[in-house]
Image (cartoon, each protein chain N blue to C red):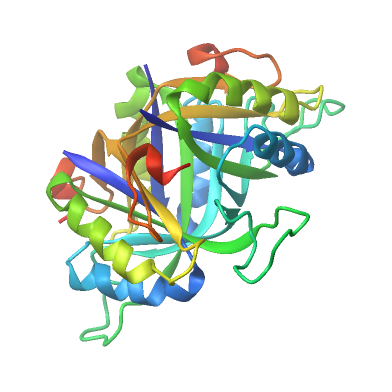
Length: 113
Length: 113
Length: 113
């Protein structure tokens, strides 16, 4: 079974996460520049009572992996993305029913390796 | 159970949707600048016979919520995103199997709250 | 049943894929400018031993279709996106549980047509 992991992190953590995923043998990843807020509502920790929800720049990372390594990849994300403060980010696991590699027509998990 | 709601709306409706989601207590959202077309093929209503499909600027909104509030959030999207014309946008509901909050290592629905 | 197809292709193939999807009657699509690498680690075929993984510009295409045409759409993607080299891209199929068209409140597959 294939799973998609989507994570939303601070751009300053992208290089560390990329390196960790490559070292773990993840076969590919996609990065999108997005903006978002989470529980911290776009506030920095040293602010209080900010009147408005602000969007902050984030990076969305998308990878598709075999089910067996999902927990390992979530651990890598946790270690690489943390910042020591709130607003470090989140990851989500979604089911994937099929995959296709365009250049070879391979499908399923063979499309990843 | 967690669900992901992805919606594609006109950028002019983003502020209204953001405000509605925050008021409803949604714990986070992500916005991406995208381009797209739907049934209207990128035409405005006052045009006919436009020879080409054109991409229009849209915003993609991503949120992950507990299953119980999906219908409520779809109602909020419907009310906040509508423009009175075709091409107002669409929303999709996808299953999510797990979630992780990086800063605390909380998983599942605890990662959202 | 509805399915989401996400594909990651070289930007030079976007027009061909758009034309193929429109001709096949696909009711809408969304394009995002992303960066990524796959098995080729961002190398071109004429390079060897590149010391670093580089991100390359890609386009992410998102469409939601009825289950019956998923295989046909994957064929279209395979034909339109291929470049004759590695790094042409990938496509993934994800389950979708519901859809909403904002302008009419139609849901499920009626939201697509």
